Amino acid sequence: MKNVSKRVEKVYGYFNNHYHGYAAENCIEILEMLNGAKPEQTRVKDKIIQYNLKKRPLVYERKLEDYVIPISELGVEDSLLKMTDRARFDRAKKIRDEELIIEKSTERKIEAKIRDYFIQIDLEKRILTHNCDDWRKGLGIRRICKHIGKLFLQLPSETSTSLLEDMIKEKDKWRFRVPLSST
Image 1 (cartoon, one colour):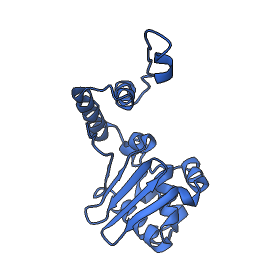
Image 2 (cartoon, rainbow, N blue to C red; image 1 turned 60 degrees about the horizontal axis):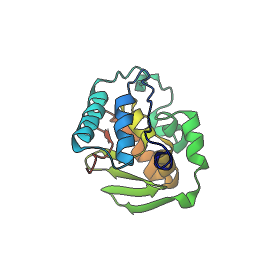
Image 3 (tube, rainbow, N blue to C red; image 1 turned 60 degrees about the vertical axis):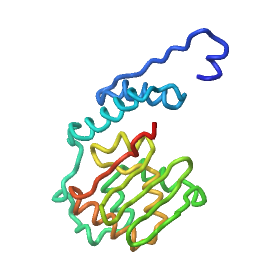
Image 4 (spheres, rainbow, N blue to C red; image 1 turned 120 degrees about the vertical axis):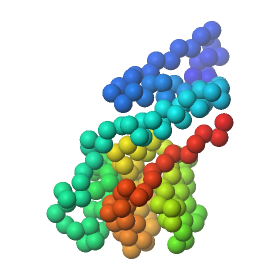
């Protein structure tokens, strides 16, 4: 868009407002990427995201009773597949190991960087924060994206299994978040 704007007088953007209604939110995100968003626009975007998190129906969420195998007997792959779909899981496996950097892994916190994104897991407060768009769009149905899937695949198996089991069993105690904008 920046390159095109150097050659033309006006640049127009069109946003597809599909059934989740992301158009206004996506428009403000583009403005933020171009460093053109006003603080009030960013506040509106954050309100939209928070509203969607509270009001978006969880019609796709599965219930624990639907699982035949007890969660405690699942491995990392099967546990991840309870929180994401096969395509995202397969994309997580394709991410090269060197693209993920685990910066901190303690009994209290896990912090990692993957590509241009970060992942923070506060184990005490049960808060998982990540900043990719797929993650943000899946918050309402508590769907794990490929980046978080890769993190769980890279962590020691025992750590991943224990953490995923807790996320599944105690899903109402966990909070999945996107970072608040810094503008």
